[in-house]
Length: 349
Image (cartoon, rainbow, N blue to C red; front, side, top):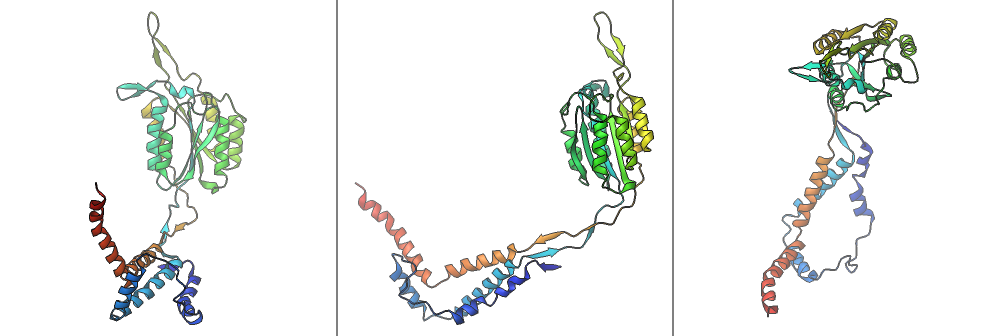
């Protein structure tokens, strides 16, 4: 339907009639504008005074212009039918470790070795795309934890910001406790049965204001379920002076603490040693059952004031161009344009 945002502007409709009846007529000797071809314009206006056959068209156009201006001032807007927003999803915070160790190249991606963070961006990005109906938020943590994206239905933005995240921007260490605390802070205002945090890391907590278990205890009190994912290969060949040796690049991964965090909050800890295992974990997390939330609707609104405003502008231009006095103006301009070459020829040497 169409609605007037400022309907009181309609009170301005009778203003032209009030001005016509109440204000004294302007005196002819009080010239408001001086033009060099006034006599020529007045001559054509006097000649046109006898031809009043189209005067009613001008008056009708004047009335329509005024009506269009007043209608534009009322701010008309079109209100579309209500659109139901997704209400069956969860509130998912994704906490992703971007510390320096996520740059370790121990992941097979196709036929080349790549970094852990590169795999995480692809797998978590696909997970984000599948979570239709969920509110998703993104927390990135290293030495500090910060909120990259608040809870939103805009999955494309969440994935884009994750994809554009550079390695180590939050510092080289791992503040797991701070990441959990920040997630709890952002989730505590949401419905209690839909608060979920998925935390991925490849190391152990070694910096921050709060320990992971302390933060997990607070999360359990607030009803936040935490799923923890430990990521990183267990074997990697390192070139040596005489021969290659095998090392465990995930020796720093604190699986015990991650398991305790998940157990305290009702979640699950899972270990991913390669890209396929990580995809399987997020596919399992993707099957979280939705929780019914409060119904939310949205009514799209489109402003329409520019249509009557454009009509009023066009009508004003037509009234100006079609005024009898303009004939003299146009004639004078044409004569000057024709005489300009002659004058240039006279002054030429």
